[in-house]
Image 1 (tube, rainbow, N blue to C red):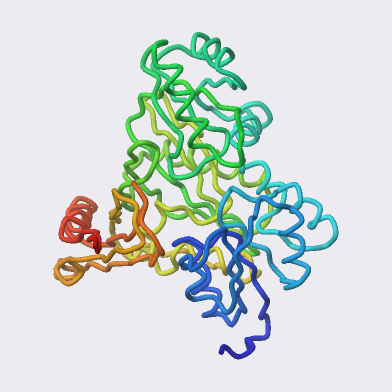
Image 2: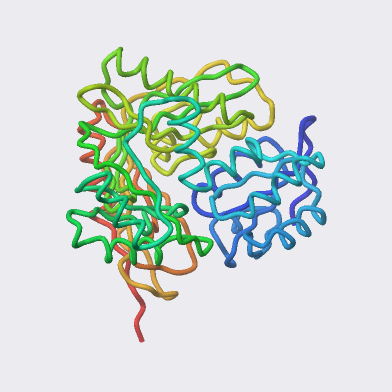
Length: 394
């Protein structure tokens, strides 16, 4: 049993969503004496394994969410996923509960329409052309408007679920089905985006705190089917690109408000920088900061939401992350090859401890440091190639 936190600024933090990113948030909060409560829709989620207490709740059910919050009475409500009853969070915030970074930020970023309209129409930031559709017929019209190839995504999803590339009008039916089946919260609305031929895509971790707004060094990443495979830091950018990226990130995070870390996703194109998406919480590609920075993205997030100073962020050196994924569904599995992976120089492994595997689900990550980004990427990739998900079949 854990004792009560002792630090002068100690608070109770209730985490909504308890995946591998939430697990690191919980650990960082506990290092500063914060009492932690982890919530998710399934039992034994990664953050639940380290939190003081945990609950299994349908977070899309506003009344159940409210009942839990009123029972625990946390000082901080910290969403870690999109699939939450954000309208209820808005009501709770109006009653005096503190939602991180704000309830409005959680609501706007929960669906791609809210954040895209804010960025493109309100803030007038450069983005890909886009359209929305509520039916197959509307989608066919939107695809004609945007042109092919284009990217079709559910309004609300995570880790690339439901995302596909529509290469021709003949693909529309299949893309519609993929989006509807992969979306969350039973939404039937989709977004159609212009296919951007970018030179690279980055995450610019942006921190809002009592010390002001500051930025981590840009993180480059590779995605497959909308889900991150590897990331590295720092990603090379010209001074003009970096200035434009930081200006975009500053504008969108100022509009969303509150204190905390935001993961701002951007496309680096020949003609400039385009805004893609933003998450009001630590970003999966930002796991690399656990080996590259003096303060990881999780430490930065916790400091910011507690109102603690962040005088600076120091890059220790180049690093990379690479994920290990499962390709089968099972509750009986093991991660093999960890000893061999850790034989790779300057490499760490994080096994998430998820109770079951699913096709394409991230189960672990290798984190490597080196003198160059290229060598760090090579080491992280080599470490993951030495690991595997082994199923205990009867």
